[in-house]
Amino acid sequence: MLNYNTIAGLVEQAEQTGKPVSELVLAQQAEQTERPVEDLYEEMRRTFQVMEESVTSGIDPDLRSTSGLTGGTAYRMQQAVREGRTLCGEVFGGALTRALAVSELNASMGRIVASPTAGSCGILPAAVLTLKEARGLDERTCVMSLFTASAVGMVIANNACLAGAQGGCQAECGSASAMAAAALVELAGGTPAMMANAVAIAIKNILGLVCDPVAGLVEIPCIKRNASGVANALCAAELALAGITSAIPVDEVILTMKRVGDTMPSALRETAEGGLAMTPTGRRLFKQVFGT
Amino acid sequence: MNVFDIIGPVMIGPSSSHTAGAARIGRIAYMLLGQPARRAEILLHGSFAKTYKGHGTDKALIAGIMGMKPDDARLRDSFELAKQAGLSFEITTGHLEDAHPNTAQITLYGEDSRVSIRGASVGGGNILINRINGMAVEISGQFTTLIVLHRDAPGTIAHVTELLGSNGINIANFRLAREQKGGTAVMTIEIDGDAGSELNRQVAALENVLGSTMLKPI
Image (tube, rainbow over all chains, first blue to last red; front, side, top):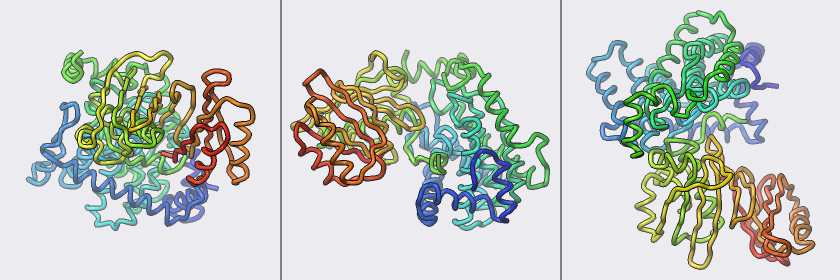
């Protein structure tokens, strides 16, 4: 029986059955929730459609957050891609654009999918939709990859956590980045073992990242960390697909993330009492929004 | 835990606790009132009081009070929609004793009824309603929930639970609170699976029951 205690367990089952992780997860979830497979797939497909809509709506030069602090960067990034002004071309630039778009839409009270959280909602859609465009993937393949991504999220939730207030930004954008890396590997036709390595690499790269939102709002630095999160997912997936392995096994990396989160001071866990929130500019922006 | 706890909920941003959770608290108040609200009085406590403007907590609460779900795209325009619908509201900040940091106290007035609730947004969009009309309750909104207002009289609980049992309904959680001996009391009954509105009518018709509301999972 498939469980979500370790990534190694998922890989083992996938290797034994010769099935992709996504298919195993879908079957197990249907059993667990006592719902038909088609029903669960359809719900995930609708979720995927919301992700697509959130990218489209988020690329808007006039978009502004409720606080007035942020907005419009996804459009700028898209312009740079369209005009050929980027360093790394369309795929990378497109991923950054999409992550910014969804995250900015979230800050402006638009409709998004928390994946796994609202603060990190841009990373997974950006990764999947970028590869969809770059490789001409069909919708079904993309929707299925979200089951793999959520399996990774469940293992992290079971062994560490997904909330910035508990584990810092590594738990939110880090987890999202690991989930996105797993989805990317499956979308690119990588093996389950490559998927596990991509997850390990993605988390290792952001280990210790603090959660320090200016004025306590999901905007600064969260929106740009979504862009950085998808960049990290692409990096981890590229390395794993090239056959590069993580020296530290993935499940040990996840437990490390938990331990690092536990030792992180509360000021750096979403309290807006440390990090960038406490810079002179961070304090000034707080006053600008809340007037006190 | 299932896949949609990880990829989901679909919601209006920016914050699952300060926006999605707030909309859910408002929506519970709406369902308990059982009719459109004409006036809403909202008191925000703790982090809700300090940061509601930046998170759109106020707009989310009003949207919920108008019956909108946390993924309703009209949520950001709820103030304007409230004006059109003839709902007046007042939002103040203050301190509530022994309350969770993300707490809202809402009093709604309809055409001929009134309800007051205190609810907390406890993380990830999950909520806990802990008072209805001043009485202690515990409602998570994750189950189908019956809220039965009744006279504190012997046998009333047995009548209600017997009716549920004879309809093949299993109780997941049960909680009773009363104002004083012999006064008004409230049963909060979370049940497994679903139940039809007919059952709610039958509960409401039982002796010593003053009113019954069935909340669907939110």
